[in-house]
Length: 105
Image 1 (cartoon, helix red, strand yellow):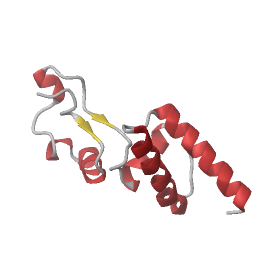
Image 2 (cartoon, helix red, strand yellow; image 1 turned 30 degrees about the horizontal axis):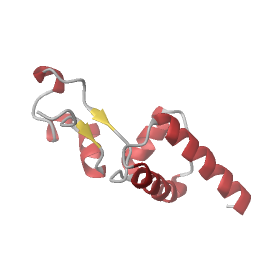
Image 3 (cartoon, one colour; image 1 turned 45 degrees about the vertical axis):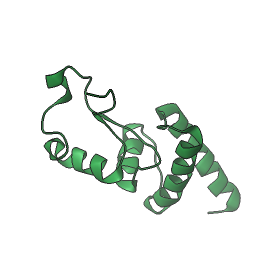
Image 4 (cartoon, helix red, strand yellow; image 1 turned 60 degrees about the horizontal axis):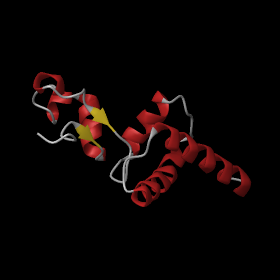
C-alpha cells in the first residue's frame, strides 16, 4: 500500500472520518502496519474540517470568515504543492485576521 493511503485531505472524506471512521477506512491503519490515520488541510479541504482543525489548534475565527480563510488556505496549498502544516495554518490565520482588521471587517 502507498504511504499516503491513510492520509485524507478531501472535505467530504475528513468530515465522514470525523463522524464515523469506518465510512472510509474499513480497517484501522495500525492493523496493516501504518501510522494512524492523518487528516490534513490542503487545497481539497472543506470548511467543516478546517473549523475542526482551528479548534484543535486553539485558534478562533468567526464562522462567517471561515469560507474566506478556506480560499486563502487552498491558494496557499496549491502554491506550496502540498498539505498545509500546523505552523503554516497558524501564520495564515494570523495574516487573515490582520488583513481583516486593517480593512475594517
